[in-house]
Length: 191
Image: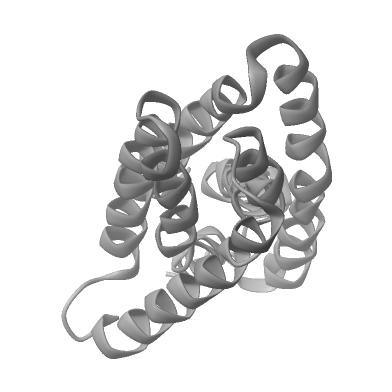
């Protein structure tokens, strides 16, 4: 189903919801990797120990990529993988905020595993059926990378008021929206 007869890029609600989803995903991915050293230090961890956590996060992301290569689409669909990863993100995000000390740091580190399959799932779901509008839709999705600048800035403001650990509450609505897209949002299409 290509919908190539649609006259406007605005005729594809699943694309626009996908753009918001990708914006939020890139934002929480950046937060999970880029804030972990400062967060670990706020938990009184020394710099030599804290600086290894981004590496663990990147290893977790690579493990997720490998799982995706093996499992998608043979064992699990892209949308189910997205929903599972988003649900894992919700759980780990809550654990990051609610659990103490080093356990919380490991939960934040494992968010990279949750984030690993999001880009390769959101993008194709969002451009599905765009037909002749695929190039424009893809360009709009690429612009959603700006979430990697906006969401961490909001995180920084929240850190001032909620503290280093409390600011991670920001991840919860982001992952819930991503979960919504993986469960239902990608299906919203106009006839």
